[in-house]
Image: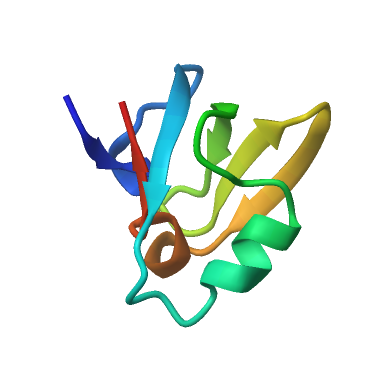
Length: 74
């Protein structure tokens, strides 16, 4: 079931399927290692859900909710 990374619960491991071409930060996300096929885990969220902390390739990365919604996961 495909959904945006912003909809994933804390502690869940998931796999990136795509990054929307409409995103103005697509290139930056890919440069940080978020590419299709990579496993990603949501390690934390702020009380209001923004920002989101993810664990990817052994490091923690913080994304805005608006950026995370462009990342499709399964």
